[in-house]
Amino acid sequence: MTLSARALALCFLTSALLWAPGCANQDGDPTPQPPVQPTPTTGTVTGNFSPAGALTSVTATPTAGGAAINATLLTGAYSFAALPPGTYTLTYGPAVGYAAPAPQTVTVTAGATTLAPPLTVGPAGSALPEHLTLGNPSGATTDVTQPSNYLLDRLQYAVSYNRDQGKPNWVSWHLSTSWIGSAARQDDFRADPDLPAGWYAPGATSYTGSGFDRGHNCPSADRTATVADNSATFFMSNMMPQAPRNNQQTWANLEDYCRTFLTSGNEVYVICGSYGQSGTGANGFATTLDQGRIRVPARCWKVVVILPVGTNDAARVSAGTRVIAIDTPNDNSISTTWGTYRTSVDAIEAATGLDLLSAVPTAVQQVVESRVDNGPTS
Image (cartoon, rainbow, N blue to C red; front, side):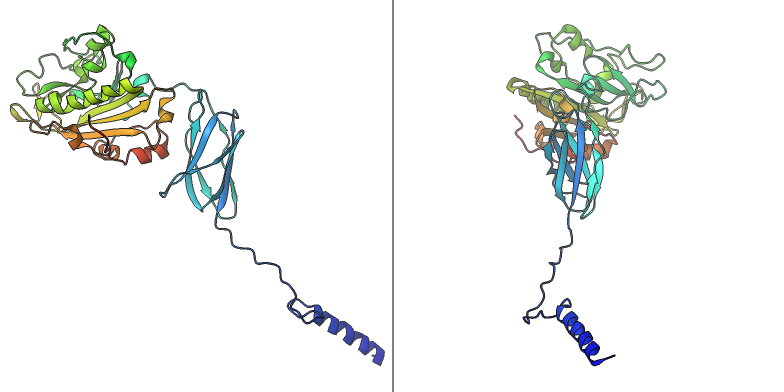
């Protein structure tokens, strides 16, 4: 290589070193580096729905526990801009005239966008009858081969009847001003003609001499619009053996309190029942009545949901809805103050195996069913 060629090569090498990344430039200053991008810590979720105005809210609740997060709602779409990684349950608040879609589950990954399945929101209209608007707690059906969970769905209330216990598992009913009138108490206790043929049907005298009341599940005073409505509450399929003090005082005080909500623009849903075996009535301890054909329960429970008057009721139950749950011993010495026996819906479900309020959005159930009411009692 000639001298001039070596000089030219050295010049190029020197120039390359001067402009190499991290080296000083011709003025001796460090060469600027591109900024380091932070590692993403959240992800996004987007979804579409139709009709465009069918939803008023979308919330994401961590399945591992935590507060619900509200989406930004657009026309026919929604988005969550910054959700920590994890699995979430999406629940939907429908606009008036639409039914709440079933909750969906999505998984959020940091730095990624998750597209939720598209929704078609259907019109309002309960898939269940009036008295099962908040759900069918045991999935009862009119299948005679299921005698321990037989559905009696009558105009005035719904029953899961247990043939082998001679009493209901639960009774559910809707209470509104339309059910209240001037019909007198009929007191026409009688066997239920709608029980399947061949089943033993408790009659008016089945509790006679037992020391236990024929305790209404759906109360007579909740059905006074017509004589027929009131009479329907006296079918023995609506009764449970109940300690007189419990039935006539503790239970009656709560029933009276529930009806007070109707005068302030509310409607009420009630589910009640009994479980276990053995109670103490006016004549002492007993496990069965009527030659063993009727089980005396150990506990009597009730769940009350209070809502402002409206439509699409299951979807309107919110985390702020007042839900009262009580679980009382079937004992003639209990307190007459029903508030003493307040508990959570979750606790009643654990004791009975039922799924109460099953038609209410899952995220809302998780909140209201775990809470013990501490509101007024009169």
